[in-house]
Image (cartoon, rainbow, N blue to C red; front, top):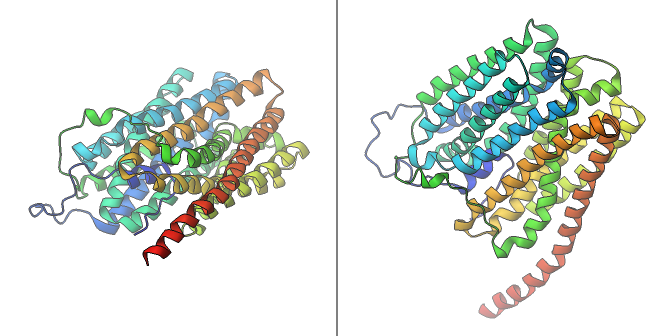
Length: 437
């Protein structure tokens, strides 16, 4: 049987972390057997990923409003964005396995309550410190929820859960960016109304989670599960060295669009329309979803190769568009780069993780998380410094794009270099198989 690994943060947790105490199979009859389960539960869990990632993308169109009100620089914008990525990473590494011991529902309901608290902080923010606090709390709650959601999905329906894990994150980021932009454009008091609406959505979802069947029996070891597990098995070092550059590159690209995408669109078009600005992240994320769906059954190596080539092409087109001042070409490049983002991340995970032994996979995925979320947060902050203290937004985007392309080329070189080695390794195995026959 072949194990398929899909794109998306929740997918990785779910694929490698099984319930520590097992599911309800073989246990006495559940007195709450009529609780929400199976495919309907998967749809509820998928909608929760969409809502959490949408709320993380919702502030992107609002940064211009905050900047005008509180007079901060692009450095602050990127720092506010970057601390979210680091908070998600911290939560994934420490809380990702907690639901294996205390249950899926307790972790999810607690994470939803904390996440709603972050939205209250956003809605009542009066300055940058509140924005930073809200993003940290938002990141911690999102990271804690993603691990439990991914595992619960596979508990309920493995095939549908795997697919939902792959596409829901991109759908959340895309919908959050564009819906927030539309709210700014057409609704009153968007810096309050958006977050209050999201709290309402989370309340409905919390009621659905409370009605969901629990798939894990509480077991000891909750405190021990908080210790991060990061490993690099010797057998997968070469594939990891190939995958790391593209993983870092695709998330760095997402960080640029999340932090500075609207500002870049406004510079290219001369328009302050927030909907137009929000389209940059929407196009990138939506294209990533389409690529993930289209290539979900392709070989991992093929997916990664397509992702690298699409990333190089898309970013190159985007850099040319920035140099020419063409918004139309910029959005075309963003769509191509988004396909590279979705398939590059999916291909990188699927190329590496199945090669590790089962007991090594959780630690290996944690390592890939570190790379991905550092790529999401750190380069974006550096870009903010480049905008203020370097050559400005356009020059910073050029250098940023060149760095992403260089990382993708490095990954391409590693992928092509390992192919002959794989063929040489296959020949002795084939000869041995012939002898056994």
